[in-house]
Image (cartoon, rainbow, N blue to C red; front, side):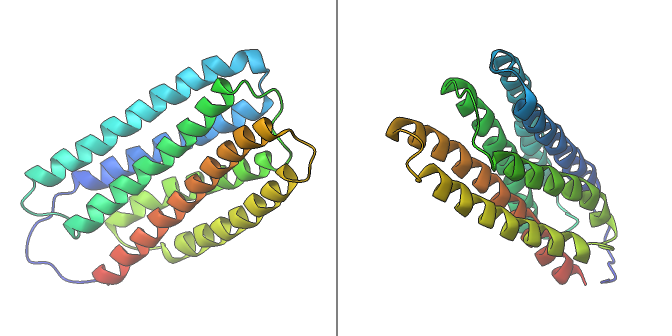
Length: 206
């Protein structure tokens, strides 16, 4: 690791960890949605909306700290990119839950559970990785595994699309369900963006 002669602002580490922990909360709400009665989904969506607002607050706090800090723990553009990508994950998960409620989906197609399981695992890995930014240690396995999960998410997404277009669903239902599975895929992509940013930071700091 590079030797530094200047002190660094360390509150960013805590804020990134808090943001990632909030994503775990969001992933648990997604899992809860899977097993919930349709009548209970609106309440889950409210809790997800609150979590998404908490994520926005965390992101704004990071940006405020970035704008007011003379010295940062790593490059400013990487801090901005990491905070933005973490925020994107919450936005996509909240959007997916909201769409399920707004479209009054009675039953999600088989395969959505696998999408959400991938997101849940990626959330856990991300939350475990954020504290390691302090030392830049034990991060390689994290970004390798998240990239593997994103590849798995791609395969699940393609199979879901094939299932939606097999003629079982009417056209309007296909449009609704496709939007939901597409948003979940975007969440998986956002997890990969976070992992790629962490890798970039680690390489620069090595």
